[in-house]
Image 1 (tube, rainbow, N blue to C red):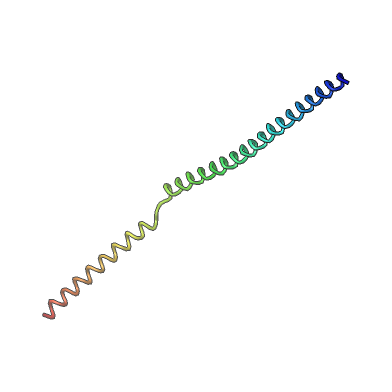
Image 2 (cartoon, rainbow, N blue to C red):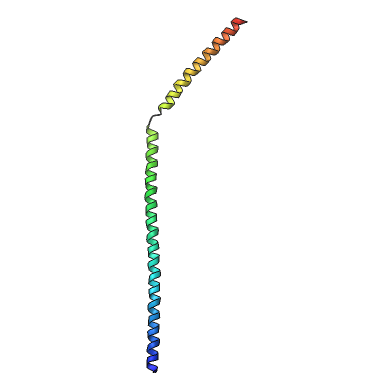
Length: 100
């Protein structure tokens, strides 16, 4: 009977070792899966960031190289308006002097 008791304890110890190693393997594989998910998310964010950076650079180059026609239009409009305004003031001032 003593022989079977030690065999039972040895078998129990081996079963415990197998269970512990299985738990350890599951834990390691779970960590690997989490790292794969993190790597996937990191790659997606890196690609989105790269596309956004390229778009920003392209927009900056476009704005730098495209002439600003509105600025020229505003300058012409301001000059004409200023001339008309001062001419009207001079006409009003001359009319006021004649009235006095």
